[in-house]
Image 1: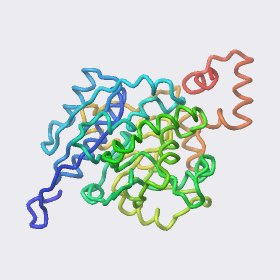
Image 2: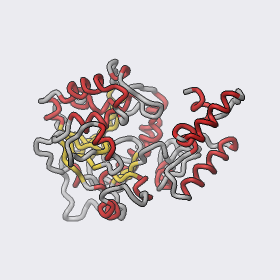
Image 3: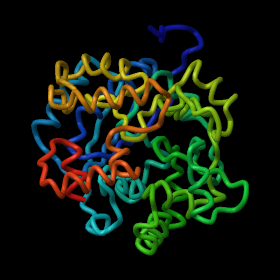
Length: 344
């Protein structure tokens, strides 16, 4: 527990934090907020949520999850962006991912910088150092994504340009407003369409190239970094150092800690924090005897150090495609993700 009465603690301006998600994601948002407030007991926080869909009951549970904290204010902003509904999405990334791009137009003009956080992460340390990072005239500061080398080439970024993960962004909203960056990003997204494999993240890297400052890995430490492949990942030493004391732990990819069949690194951190929210006792998504085979396959592949899941086998391997076609021919009625795969 941090003692805020220590002489070196001085009260400063509030840390302004932004989340973007709809009501269906509020369970995970509650976990992220509880972790944020717990780890920043000595800071005052001004929390903003941009929501594309408001529902009374989830919002009530979200607020109830935060009742034990007094060091924050919370504002939820409605966002209706018809243009983003036409932008490219995929089976696991929805149009809500684009909402963060409109922070400069949705939030009051008095908010000149904001710390954007994805809702599928947990905060493990005081964020004052990150909040105080000098942006200068950069548009954003973010953490390099060591798994994004192929995207740099695909997007045509200059040699040596860093590809960042957009799950944690320290945003210079004054610059975003002055240079109409949301409009520029919107035009690029409209033009590129399905070529943007990682949606808003690809767009941010392409349009804001040269205007991005790079943060230490500890400020957006992806859970998958806890088990790096043997080769092909840069900055191994820096990632290893960050793993000793990550400030923000980010559950990227489909290996979400709330999904029963997924072997997720550091899943216990999420489950422990969930117990402190109004969603305590909620079972993992998809937990059932019918899912046990998929659970065993996924955990077996993970134990062997393979970056595959049952879902990925079906979608991206020859044997998976053969199984899908065979099931179609036999008119099998599979359950869960297999049924989803057959419908695509």
